[in-house]
Length: 252
Ligand SMILES: NC(=O)c1ccc[n+]([C@@H]2O[C@H](COP(=O)([O-])OP(=O)(O)OC[C@H]3O[C@@H](n4cnc5c(N)ncnc54)[C@H](O)[C@@H]3O)[C@@H](O)[C@H]2O)c1
Image (cartoon, rainbow, N blue to C red; front, top):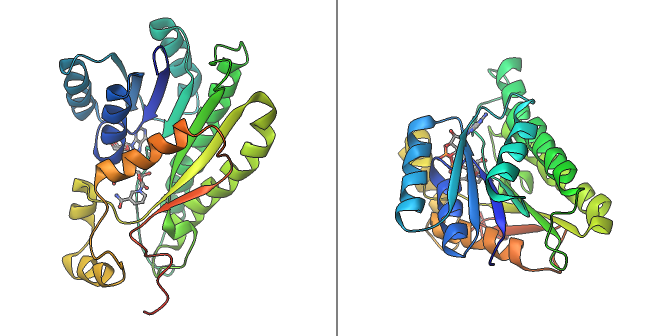
């Protein structure tokens, strides 16, 4: 992995922080992005403290002028970017009857617009071919099993993440001639502080009954799947489901 640089968004907390730490341990230089300044500093200190190369940029990705600036700064610090992992996002469940247009718009802004703009900036920055000549480029977008099966009161989140899955598939075809691969990670419930805070205990207990493996994914398991997708040079345009069997389970 010597010499590769990866950008990880949403790296201040939860899954994004775990992805950034794993990529750093794998030998990549990492550029970590988030709007949560304090937690982002903690991730940066943890990676640098372990002796790995990292640089942080505090930014709100719903500002669409941000991605170009991120790639310019990453280029300046590490000389180019080969890989991109889009993790940043919010989960906001609610029923159709009570959901507001603003809440729907803010989900679409981060999961669709921000990720689209990050990929666009990545490809533009890569067009001066600073990509590894053999491995090309690789993008992993963090999606969800909500994009693949219906779950009550998640329609706005499912719409936003479903668009991300569809967009990734189409871009994989469009960008294959540039040897840039794109894949989506369809995560099931994954153990993060946010999930523990957001999910009422009774709903969590009910969800666990629907997961054949009867537990949540660890952040390390989610991060490991992202690393697998980055590394495998023949996988593109796919959804990798990491959900303990939730999507496969029919007997509910
Ligand atoms: N935890 C789960 O069970 C689970 C399951 C499936 C998918 N996901 C997806 O994984 C991703 C991470 O989830 P998590 O549970 O680790 O959440 P988290 O809240 O712990 O981490 C998300 C990070 O994204 C950042 N972020 C959000 N909006 C941003 C913006 N506009 N600009 C910059 N940074 C922004 C937050 O500050 C935060 O640090 C999300 O996209 C989520 O939809 C999570």
